[in-house]
Amino acid sequence: MVYGNCYSYLFWSDGTNSNAKIERSDLSGRSRTVLVSSAQGLVSPTTLVVDFSSQKLYWLDSAAQKIGHVNFDGSQPFTQTISGLSQVSAMTVYRVRIEMLEVTSMTNSNCCQFCHRYEAV
Image: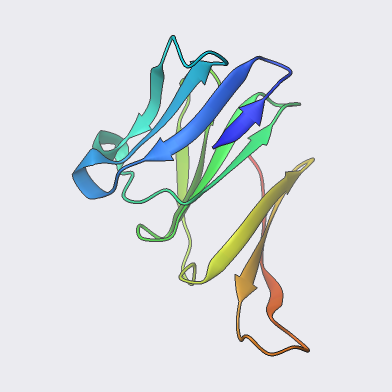
């Protein structure tokens, strides 16, 4: 779940496979809107990131090997296929970059490494 206080929205993902969806509501949980669903190729969204400056919600779908974004109102959904997303544990959007971290081992000295960097569109 992600809280977007600038626009008074809550965003969350729910379900997998044929029931997968990303939704938005107001802060009281009312006015629920499905932004993206399995009908649009969503399989198992695991990470959500809000970019307030562009009013876009980004997601990571490791099962489908995709990252995507959609406008806060649900318009203009976009996905991009990316290989090697099986162990991504964190994602952030900064200006025009999407950066992700991948868990590679559970040693004390190095548990995460930089995984991917993409230009946000």
